[in-house]
Length: 376
Image (cartoon, rainbow, N blue to C red; front, side, top):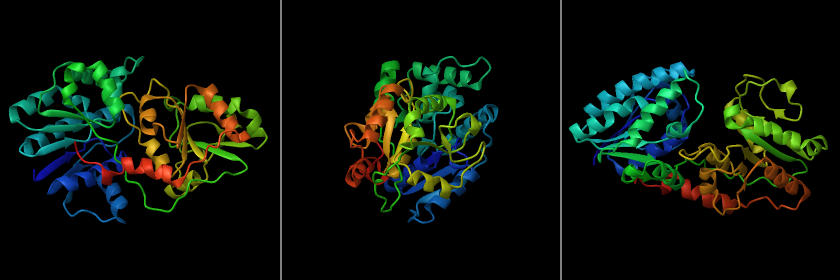
């Protein structure tokens, strides 16, 4: 097929920037013309990322209005508007192959009908929205309750043959088939593509103080309470200067309340990209606190950020992280915080060799490099 329309009514700013950039490059190898419809801020951000790289001439950026904002109600407005905009863009490009940048819950009531009537092939890239269907204890008046109901209803019914859900990992497909087996033939899988930077970064060599940290915006939902608990468990090593635990990213915590933790940013401060990257470079490993109830139906870009910087990973066990790390030596998967504490103590004492080679990181990078991934 000569042309593809990639419709992304969810991304604003740097949201999913590396993934979207990688997918655009993959599409450019399969189609003569790739038209990317997205917000002004998203397009400007992507253009800044590709300014230092050869840009395929067949990628055409098409700016559309997308409501911005980060509150739950602003996001709901973005979803509502995006569903309407997507409807008309699908009609406009009905004779071409269409990719949707996410499974917008408000689009689900019409997708099957539109695909059937217009005989249009619609491919939907699925991200964290699939997790809504297994999320529990949602507050009564939160928009998330609506998203969950709509997506659950869509998946529960038979999906039209013209629609394909593009899942970013085999573990996600396995879990989704277990929940909605009636649509198993509508699920397609590709590895999460990543735009790995070209540099000569080497895995960090062992230093006197073990330097570990969490990266990015931290919150209770992302398991930060387990991080604080780990700090208490390792109080002795921290006070003896054998270990340093860092938070590299934005947060809303009072620093004085957590004396065992090194906050790189002040409360509500946003780090510059240069400082953010410089602080990551100092780490021996990146910690992740996503437990077994998380990442069943979604991929993680954060794990590839760590791999991109050739940082060892120490993570709580979850399906997606285990599928990415496999039997490689670049990550250690722990069943609980107690086990993570033991692993870190063994690294400090020298019982765990811990450090990985450059080749081990490059093997994983090769598997998820956008250059080595084709559209299914």
